[in-house]
Length: 282
Image (cartoon, rainbow, N blue to C red; front, side, top):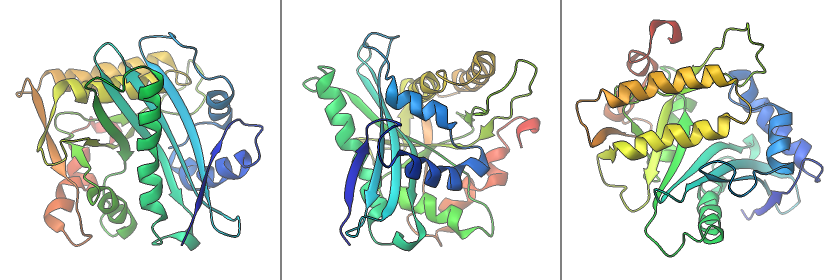
């Protein structure tokens, strides 16, 4: 099946409401989608050059079939650090609508951000020097009895992704709700899933890139998450990383490449992953 990929340029563009609505139906019930006004702001008022240490771009992509029907949605951030020559490509959401699953669209949506990263590197004048490029996603641990949760991990495993061991990096997505100062934040423990371009066969990740995973993603979240909540999460997560007995690298857990690969799935199940998080987050 052939698909047409389009970029949604602004919140006023045709296709924005359908794209956001599709993402909201899938991810909002789990607390894993930013508010509509946040995504609209990312599109309509991108960060100015020199706004902080990072160069950030956001893209919202839609996929349509030959008849023009919405088939899928992908959004991602490219966060560059020119000082350390690190590029984090944050794969925020990827959604293939049910009628179009298992047609190859999922792989197409997972690969599209690479082209966006290359363009961002060229625009920032970083294309002609060595740069660590890390594709970064957040994924739910596998749930026993929920085959779909294993299928999602398997799709990324087939494309060279691994999970940073939660023993070294117990990562949480912050609470995306609009919280008052008195509201208790409810972060979501997730797996930090990564693919370091050119290093897919390695069983470890340099600590500096594990740290960059948190710092770069949290720089995106700082645009809409309450500052004290975000800072507390970052301190706790990086404190565990800094206390690692491996000062230069952290272990990577292989993602399954088949849904019946129980040896790979078991360390990624909720009981195993959540055992590395504080009791209140389990």
